Length: 187
Image 1: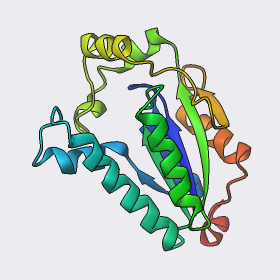
Image 2: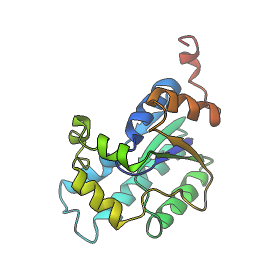
Image 3: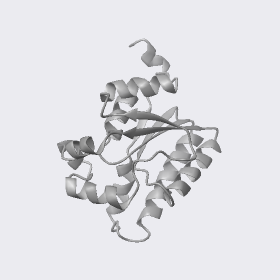
Image 4: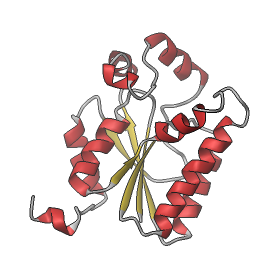
């Protein structure tokens, strides 16, 4: 399995780029909010056990995908520099590689002015994402969400400078991703 981890701050365009990338590669999108939404159905996000249960579901799903030889998966992730995210990334890579998979990283980013412009988009509400400038400013002030992961190689994409379709094509080219054979005839 090929796992692409698209990471960056809220409102940087991770899901939008992931959806475009899925369209041109045939990879499946694993939006990070899916697991959070499941756990939130029966546990308060402020509960100390919340994130560990979210991570358990994420690991289980991605490890199963690697075992089943799913061709490709695109995972979106808000990375906060330091622990516990460093531990999460290391464990994720170990679990996928244990089953013959490969993990590649893409840092999705744009400047803060662009983040603030995007945070109010209506599409963010349907996914329960941060949707106010005040909340985004608070989150950006609390954690370091804009830096690259220091111990992995990441391909950088500035979504303030390129459109989502262009970003997806850049990632596809950089990582030499091929569409499934049935999709080749459509290109």
